Length: 313
Length: 313
Image (cartoon, rainbow over all chains, first blue to last red; front, top):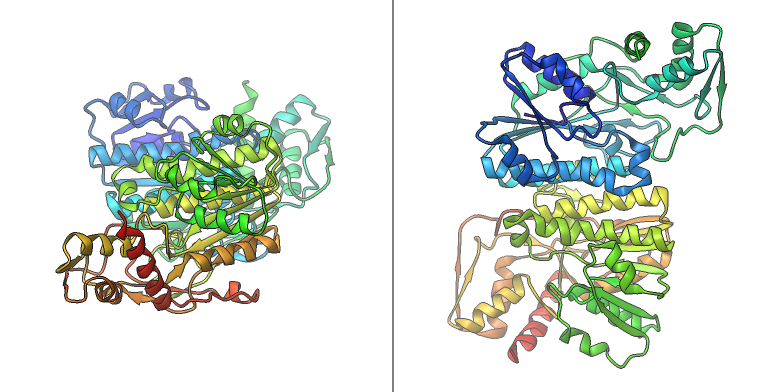
């Protein structure tokens, strides 16, 4: 079962699980994902989709009827960080109460394993310090990060009482298609609207690692298959990332080579955005897995994919 | 404003704040505290009490009417850990949703400062490792600890957006009167019921630090008055604590000297209970403040106070 499976990461995960022969049921409230996005799976007898509010354990339990679930993939969350800042209830319900509801469902149905899409946002701002999984203090600076951390805490408590296996994946910016938000989609849409000028929020010096969704899904399956009792892994590229300026220039070059780029001020794009961080994936690479794409290559591929996606819209 | 002020810590805090001349309004849903406990403050023109559900920002906002609040003390929580294990909604609503509601209230009313009763339970089980405030990973093993950690995360995010000052007090077992729960009250009530035998949950080897509520309140006021933008402090005794066995023997000696003591098995009293920990209060002592009582003295005083409290019941 993939909760929030109609979203960007969920769709890619479902594709990979179906490709390897697993049965997949996606549960999603379609607050962000669309029913049309589920069309790609229709006709596959191993796939089913249920539209349901994943923050309500009774609704979830009823909607699943007599299906037997042996693993929960929890990809449900509010991915619109500014929306969560404007109204705290968005992250609360979509990012945290989904965790609470899924754990209650697992208790009722004795489901033994959950794999959770956490976030590098749980760490907050560590400046130039290398962020490994056991670092402290954890001071998330957005409601989104706070509700991801709250979810991790709840998962840990549930593991102590009734959930046998928990995987926590902490990942930074993930890119690819189908893109619904994020800096690359933003740039491509802006360039499509005004092909002669790209306006960038902030001064462009913000630097982050970018992970292609294909690498993310491969890493999650790799970790889940290890079946550790309580696994916490950073997942990210093996480099220190690329700047917003570099992404803007790559996007401009790919879409509209003659466009000028206008930068704003400050090194934060919005409240809750961490200007830069250095991310350790040593725990992950120690298991023998490495990302196939570095940040720069991932960005280049995602730009091409997203230009292609937006061409027909 | 003290949220959850009709509880054990809240009553002691209100007493101290009134003693120093502050105006105090207690808001409490009386799910654990009692209206009778508020009698001690009646007649003091600087005191008022409002019965209201602190997990609902609209109810809170309405109940406060035109009162001007300049500091929130957030002491509202489910203190019954086993109840929170039996039903996850107890900790969710009473411990976490109160934090969410108070932060929303602060946003609406531009209240600049909040002081939060967190817990050593956010740390989880670090074995013999010394627990300082920046240690990781944070793996709480009870819903109670999870919801306290979730609250801290939400406070951090709110500090980034609209709350000027936050104090987070992480404290272990606090003892004293009016006692409503905890190992000492449990022992005294058992001895009162069966004066010849005290049955102890677990083998008694569990060792913890105990802080007297008078020291806790003094430490909280000390930290709050420092007015740091985001203060996180462990508060506890300066020693490694006393064992359950020692508390049982001290209780027996004080109440019913000839009683026998029967121990159970295992070193955990219940799910979500950490068998022992070592707690650093160096950050606190670096500010010049030290507890006046060690664990053993605090336990002895609390035993006497609680025997006195229970005598008349």
